[in-house]
Length: 124
Image (tube, rainbow, N blue to C red; front, side, top):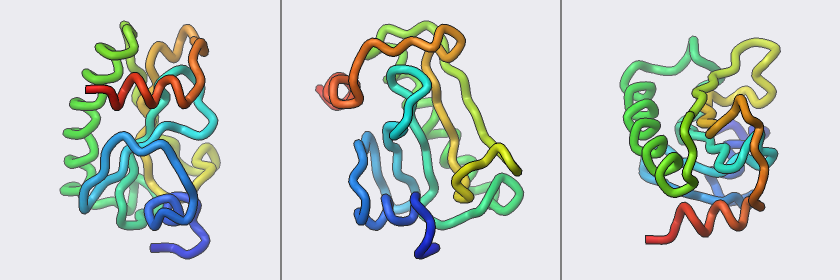
């Protein structure tokens, strides 16, 4: 953990977030500043600065979870596309590796609040 990292603080529950999934290795949350309804982040709990530093085992876990979350996002939110984004270098604002899942990114749809999206995604 990095004591100054925003995502490490979220993982330690020092900062609230809308958690969609969590296990020993990963946390999945709604983005605080979404580019579209359902904009989700998959974050490893271990602090890896970027794509260059992360190990393959953790990266595989992230993409396995991404497949599962993609299906849920598309089905529950009625979306027809998902964009996967990994920022690197200057484009990476938070220096803790994370994968963005952005439903219907091209259309930049914002119709729901984060609270509404969270409720839809966490209903059984």
